[in-house]
Length: 325
Image 1 (cartoon, rainbow, N blue to C red):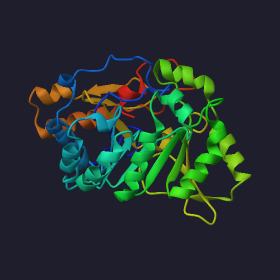
Image 2: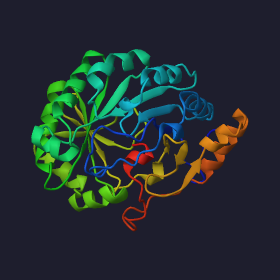
Image 3: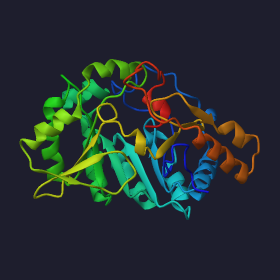
Image 4: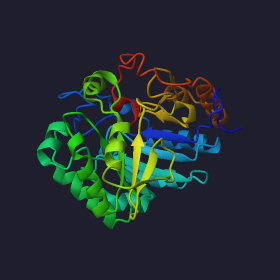
């Protein structure tokens, strides 16, 4: 039987975290100075990851996105991607990254089986990038250009829009993506853990941003292939598509088709709830593939109907990097 939750939503999309570590400290994701990461012994091995993804794919989940933390800090990542790309029932294998290490890895990732990527980029100004992430924008920009050379397509830019931080750069980012043939997605802040609660004070309703852009550009409703929640508009006369990801102002829970697997083997069933299902211990106890599939089906049956970010913003205490993007 395909994976259908108790609200009749097919679970077609899995976000796979390969590490909880990151080489940046984005202000809405990780606190500055945070070092309480899991030990590698607690991570799923490549063999365990492959086994879980195979089970999901045989149950009807055909899209997988590699995430972190920052996935490119996981040693040997192209090897894992090659193994996953070889699974016969996996149709779509993509990756989310901050691109700081992409300049050297773009071609190996493409060769291994990644076809498209999402890159986090909240500003085009070096000093702002440093303030938001603690890193150097030059590395991310170099990674983006390397992705183009490697033929990764589409390259989607993810920009978290924040009041008094970068909302004045919205139009600049549109022009940047027009110039480089990138897709652009705007994202609302979410109260994920302490950093997310702080960032929520900078919340910007993306409906306001859409209206603002419509005053400058002719926006036409559009779509893009993929399993994510973005609602797209196309800039008339161009190929640029702009996506709006609105978990706060217009939640999309009724069509949620995804779960998240953290690096320690925990299935997180909803980004905005604490429901979870541990798989690592079951794997290491010697369960069969059929038993693994039965546990996955049991987990999906427990997926909540919707998040409660608006009603109870302090409910989720884990950081975004712990959940898997």
